[in-house]
Every structure is written in structure tokens, then in C-alpha cells.
Length: 149
Image (cartoon, rainbow, N blue to C red):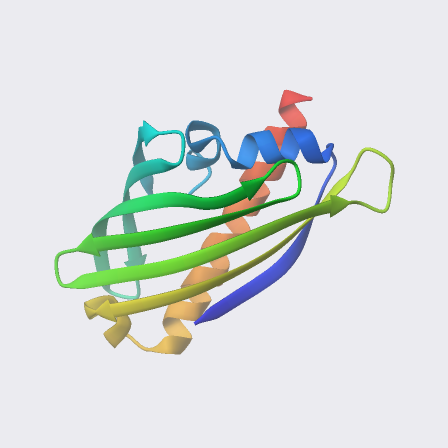
């Protein structure tokens, strides 16, 4: 499955980049994220509970920032396991100056591959749930970035 979009954030690129590359700050915005463990500057482990339809799974996800160029772009790989399900994902983020001074537009894209029980509920249901979770995550990030000033 592929997802992409653009999000306008009323903050500078430096501020947005610092937020989204800090696992403790951005991790709090992941729907279902229960914990984040920082392994080193580019490796993290998250535990998250995800529900799609009638199936709920607890994932342990290893994340790696494979490339970053502050304050312009970052690429992250994720591989997660849950009993009976697995996920592999690749996400890319590019930050550009927004239309108004001091604002940022985040252009993002993600490729997500699910296998196992979660994949069996059907692409439409998975995509609908994923889109809802993506929206919640971006709303949370925008609110927290604005609150930080």
C-alpha cells in the first residue's frame, strides 16, 4: 500500500525537523504507541497496539533513520512483528518553506507492506484505518509543534 500527502505546519523547517526526528516527541503522536526505546541516534524501537476491524495486534517495531539532511528531508525504515502479523514500511519526508513566512509544508510518502492476520481483513479496511491513524498523527504533531512555539 502506498500513502502520501502534504501537511502545512505553522512553524519553521528547523523546528519541524527537530520535532519529527526526535523519537520521544514524535512517538507520543503515534496512535496506539505504548513506548519508545532510543537505541542510538538513528535506531529506535516502538511498541504499539493497532486495531483493524475486529483484529487487534501488539507490534514491536524497529525503526531506523536511514538518511537525513536537516532541515530538508529524512527517510525512515520500519520493520515490525506481532503474533500472526508483520509490517515493513519505508517513509520519506521532505520539508519546504510554506506559503506564509515562518511556515513549513511537509511532503510525505510511505510504502507499507502488511502480512498475516492484519493483512487478511482486506485492503479497504486497512487503508481506511491507516488513513484515520495518519490524520490523527499529523493533527497531534501540528498541535504539539504549535504549543512549543
